[in-house]
Length: 331
Ligand code: ACO
Image (cartoon, rainbow, N blue to C red; front, side):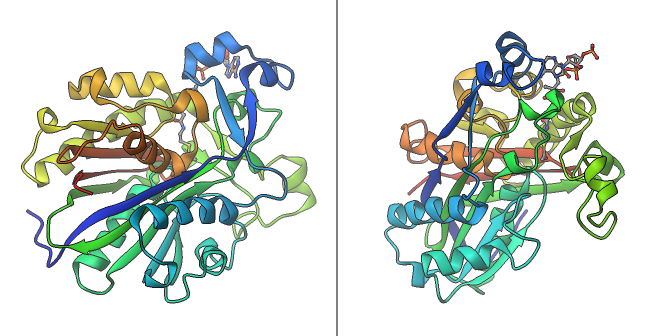
């Protein structure tokens, strides 16, 4: 049973998707693949890519401003900004600092959080603790990626999967309960399943790392697939148990948008009906830490989440990491 001091809820959501679209037909011209293969094996039809001069902090700021407007609060009221990302503008300073400047959230503490595709769920749970404990009142949590800049456009195993985008929420201390529970996990023994091996302390940038194409995402797709199903099932059940709920109580289930086949297996093993799940991966591909953040915003805006609904966000990703958060929607 979780005992926190103050109740915390989501009071606003926003998202931003870059304009440039890359369809499966476009990809057929770049690598040895086909629209049929990509749709059958992943469910993805198209993805959006940031422009060369468009950064993760740019996408983040646009999503953040929409979330602030939705929450009807001013940037200066934000006490904390966390950007969950695997594709920061730079190693340092943190992308959250760049966002703070762009949106003029002058009173906010700022840091990035890296937990693979699970980053947004991790960041929500971290911010929930800060607000619940009374340390902060208002937090801006962003999941954002420009992974298209780190994808090897000669590797058909990975380049068809990823897309760029950003999603954001505003969390606030409130009288009524919003966030009910969460569960986070990690398994560093499987770190080699998804990685971007070079450019930092293990393999600093060199002619050799560039020649070996080590500055791009590497992934053992099949192994990730099996672990994704196990870990999303585990964290969903654990998070629901912690607030005395079960899968029968879930009104809207928002899983990480990586692959339609993973989502369908997760629904089956959890016993969740298809009409309870929100899916948008056909339009955006896997936007990593932005995925469930964008999906949440779209589900709300499309009226798929109604007041008093129990919502679960669940994700998995590089690390391996995994996690789920349960909340009652009462904006
Ligand atoms: N087009 C055509 N053929 C392809 C393509 C492609 N784009 N990609 C792979 N293939 C081929 C392979 O080369 C292989 O051919 P072979 O049998 O001759 O060797 C065949 O298709 C089957 O490959 P598999 O890898 O077995 O295909 P699978 O059905 O597992 O699908 C996929 C691959 C889509 C990557 C799947 O495993 C998957 O989605 N895994 C999970 C990935 C994921 O969710 N990552 C998220 C975390 S990312 C993060 O945290 C940053």
